[in-house]
Image 1: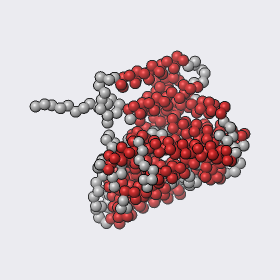
Image 2: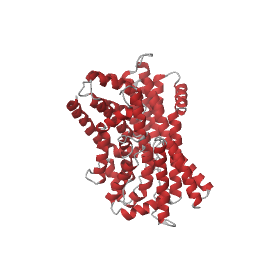
Image 3: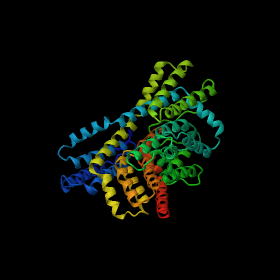
Image 4: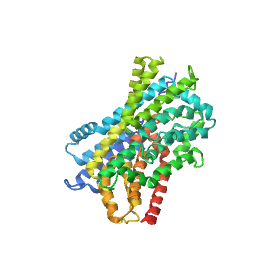
Length: 497
């Protein structure tokens, strides 16, 4: 009897076959070690790193594309940067930076919000409420195109926060899109496109509250920061372009491009979930009990989540705590579940969020490393000689989009860049709403396109695909959006300056 051995897996990417004998992984690691070691000798201690500050982010991109593994790529990039900063004690530097990041209030907030959101959605899923919602929507939605348009519209309606949008929209719609043979990659693209790019356009969102305060603190306006933010909304071109593009894709006016075309062909053949994805096919069973009650049990907790977040001054943490408590009481009163089962669901939801949380946390470590290397300052200084009043908006968008894409920090980068860009715009007498629109467009592009940004990671997690599977399939569309936005800012710069 002949024994057939299962093919071994790639050491970095379990979804790929191993490359025994070719030494590709060893060659890549050896090459990166040699590169970083050589740069440590090239750089003189105590002097600015200059172009070397770009190396860790480039390493992240190379490793991520080669291995399709997000967490490992981020860790290798961050460690490379720390070797450049502290070649004699990079282990100690890694420990210090990691501890500093984990003590960061933003990370603590993120862990609580994402963990509780995962638990909240797990309760709705295990109680059959999402099944009831999908069953109800299947009565209204009769075609594949309608399922995509409904997903986009739902994403527009949940505008209060990109985290809420990414997790709630995907949980509500993936059973329905599976039914019509839509790939999970396209679902993730639509969800991600209606997360940060839409939240930035609405003055009652977490993005608006944060950036309005940042603008006011840095003296961008003599009046309220929110008024300048509202004036800037027409110039947040990437948000408008991304919104228009996602509807064109949903209506098949813009065709499937590149990896998305391959994913859609696979889905039409019957496999909506890609190989190696962290999800399983969902059944299309009929809801148990009264389907209208099940629909109410889905809609009511979602309404409480959105309403409570708005009531507590756009604070999603307070909103998800209120919604979780409301859902527990609602389900116990109806005897849909026991208290211990609900607690188990919440813990299961926390566990499903561990990978995206780890990716975002290591992304914060990479951001801290890039800050110490002076990457943002180097980008601004390198472009300063080419800046004219007419080109300032376009250069601000392109440079900050690259920085946010490289760091995955759509909010943190602007704590550094706004105090530099705003005085520059005031000195050149460039329209402040136009420059703020360029900054916010760069932020929303970075959050949308970066494969390890919090919004993209949560969109991929909610849709049941890996971050790199999501990032590579949506990349052609984000690049189209960025190109159109850049040309738009060039035109506006010459028209308004």
